[in-house]
Length: 132
Image (tube, rainbow, N blue to C red; front, top):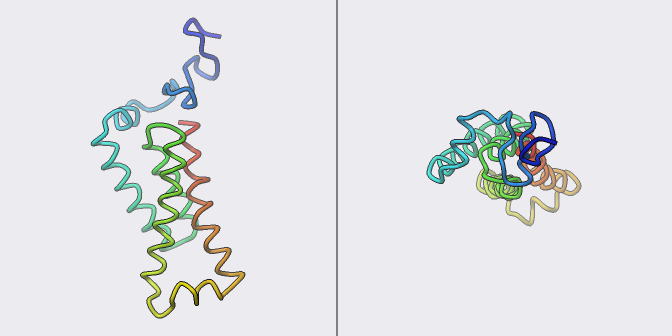
């Protein structure tokens, strides 16, 4: 235990108790502290992640990790990951205009896998905020 009462690697706090770990890069901590920078970074991370998700499904995980990294807290990172997943589902409906939402769901079980992956992968990726 360090003199400030925190335990863990590096002697610093963790992102779970609201303090930045000692191994968090300074530029990332600065983005998280300033609301305007954080919002710009969240939009940029979402656009990059959704762009990657249009190429490969691992882009969903990357999208969640990117929005999680710039989020202020772990709980906000999870909400941001869930939001990205829901945005991907809405984008899917607009990208496939020849198919309505009800027709998409009738493609079970493949559509169920797509829906679960679109929600779970970004949320799982956003948990990287608990590390950095």
